[in-house]
Length: 115
Image (cartoon, rainbow, N blue to C red; front, top):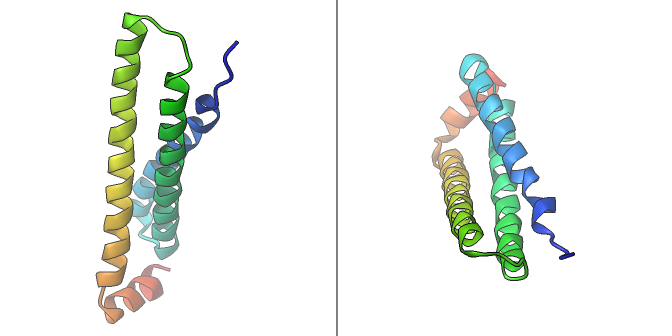
């Protein structure tokens, strides 16, 4: 039996991204400042979790015996992981930039009005 750690990490980014999507949809209806913070932190933790997941997946792929068919499936799986890492990273950075680019009045209004 091969000891792998990838399955330990893989569920965290998936769960965080699902929760982030649900909270973002709720935020569209409620527009609360606190929900925006939750979305940001979930995205950041999802991106960090995706890094651990990706690295552990690469490590585990080298020790798991597999044939050509399984290797092709693993290649698709790897591309999906890279895509998720890129998307979560871009969204996290975009939200952080958006927060810092807000004018002070806009940020105060967002917190006061929607907080």
